[in-house]
Length: 101
Image (cartoon, rainbow, N blue to C red; front, side, top):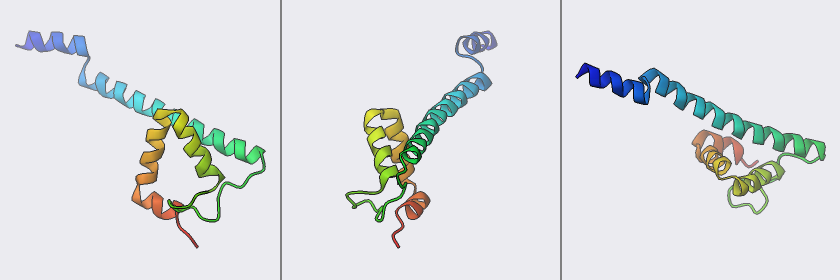
């Protein structure tokens, strides 16, 4: 029994090695997402465009340059789109992002 478990752990890797691999994938995915967001900020800044719009709620047809650019990027990159939509669904982020004055 122990011998089979040992062979199984060699074939699939130890639990620690599996956790390390999953963590590395998660970090790489977040790094790619953050790189895209930073690139969008740099692009808008170099163009001299404002990041925010007047009305950033979900029903608005123009939520501001930053959110609209990230929405455009999410259509081109499905991984980025999943991450971006997850970000928009977070309740505390929605309250700050779509707050209208």
